[in-house]
Image 1 (spheres, rainbow, N blue to C red):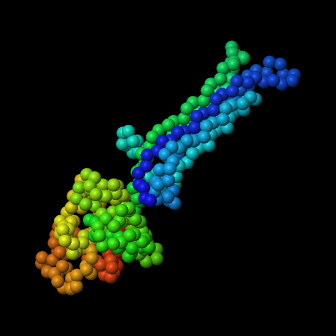
Image 2 (image 1 turned 45 degrees about the vertical axis):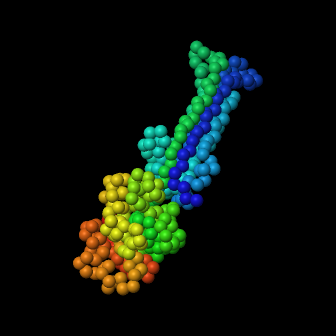
Image 3 (image 1 turned 90 degrees about the vertical axis):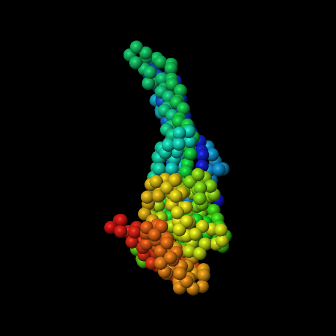
Length: 342
C-alpha cells in the first residue's frame, strides 16, 4: 500500500536520576559523597533510507520512544546513556509541525538525517554538590524529561521527470515503455491510483528517474479527484512531461482545452511548479487509422499545430504502444536534463 502522509508522536528518553551515595572504604575515614550523575536520555532522529518508499508501517506504530538514561551509582559512576532511536523514512520526506504547518526539515536524499527530539539531561549526583562549606551533601537531582512532539510527515517523490496530464492520457503506458516499471494499464480513467517510479536509460552511462503522477482533473488544486493529494510529488521534479491525448474519448476535453486545464491547476497549486521546464507530448497517435494523413498531425488546423500554439512550445507526437516518436522524446528529455549539468 502506498501511503505518502503520516502523523506520529516521538518521545525522547528521560534522563537518569542522580545518586546519593557516600564512600565507604576501610582505613578511609570520612570518605565523602560519591553519588554519580544520571545518564542522558536517548534522542530521536529521522533518517532517509532509499530502501523505503512509503509510510505504510507507521500506521501500525504511531508512537516512538527512545530509551531512558540509567540512574547514577556510587563510587562516582555515571549512569549509562539511553540508546538513541533512529526512525527510517523514504527520501523526499518533509517533516512538518502539524499545529503550525511549517516545514522543520526536508530529508530529500538518502542518508539525510535530523535530530527531531533531544533526550533529557541526567540528574546530578550528590558528589556534584560537594563544596568547602557543604562537605556532606545528601541532595541529588532527578533526571529531566526528554522532548516530546507530534510530527506530520509528507512524502514528495524524488524524480527527475514528472509525467502529468488528464486521466487516461497514456502516462502509465509511456512509463512502462521507457523503463522496467510495470504500472497498471487499462482503457479507463484513473487506472493509476498511486505514483509509480521508473528509471529510463539513455545509452550506457546516462539515466533518469521518471514519476508517473496519477491523473489530475479540473479543480485538483482545490482537492478535486486524486490530483490534490499527488501534486506534491511533482514539486521535486526538474522537468515536466505533459501528455495530451490526441484523440480524446467522448465527453473528454479537446487537446488544447485538456492542456489548459492542467496548466491552470499547476499554477493554482504553486507558481513555482507551473514555472518548471516542460515538454509537451501529443500521445496515442496510433489509435485512429490514417491519423498521420488525416489532419491530426498535418495541416493548418491540425491538433499538433493548435497544441503548439496553445502551449507556445514544440510538441512531440508519440505512440507509446508502437514506439513511434518515443526515442525522439527520450532524446529531448535527456537534452533538457543533462545540458543543465554540463
